[in-house]
Image (cartoon, rainbow, N blue to C red; front, side, top):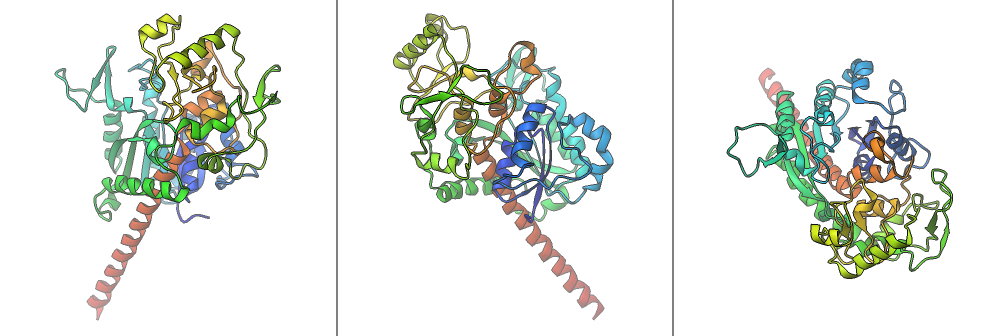
Length: 441
């Protein structure tokens, strides 16, 4: 058992939990409302094969998908009994209302779930907090406009959701700081800028030189140490990440995934070829899942072939180019083989393979997110229509996740900070004991 523990709210399929566990923290419980995402979480953290370490799940919490509202309604007293026993509370409230990749909505009810997060913080009172979200949480959405609060604006001052969150956590007794951090700096083969907010309980801040800023100094240090430890050179390219999953160098077999309809194929895996691929394939005792290839029509494949042959790679297609190909989607990236991938989203057709006329598989997207090959994904592959805001199939689970290698570095930084706090607490107790002995001598 690790010296330090964590709980994960809005855990999704478990990217943040996986990274924290790989950093040496011990998981207590996780809350996720979507049944498919929680099924994935349970398969990886509550089963028999858990290379990163199984969660020590509390007896009072049923192992099922929980909405945070229901958790607070049914288990508020149980959460309060955890006071002082959970070192880190992680939380990443759904980001769809903030995301620049989607339709930003100021009144999206998911934007207010951070208030439930704060309520759990007040109940558990962990030493440290970490929250991950999209950069859009730090800008103000108002009447269809986006106002960058970092650059200022002439309109009357209003708070972004990030500012409201920080104000709520400050009032709850935590000193907070947030910064934009790119996952590519931690060995993730993807450019993915995220807002990371970390906080320290105010009664412990005096023990930390630099306060919450210390957490980000430790994160930078952890990132450099992680690259050295894993033998990765920054940046890791898309080709280095997924070339072993290409059709052109493999034979095809029928996809036998129980969640897939018949008629689909996947590559017969031949083994890793690069340092990154070997890292991802370690501990993979059985075959990888989620390898199903998309079934594109002939005309779609021809269009994709023209795009990857003629269009600039590594950048989003502009309006004129998309129009010339008859494409209505506003976000399409032909990937570059020699650069990190663009940000992986929840939509499978946002990114085209760098050399093959097709979209990526779930497993390729997971590789670009730095999920290891042993990690299992459960539930449907995709969904559509009005179900898109209600269900969390595999592509969505991967796109919503915190990259595990990024989370691992965050976990290393938090672990180092907890060690510093423990040492300072012990030193302070020793000083008080010496003063007490001197006073009675």
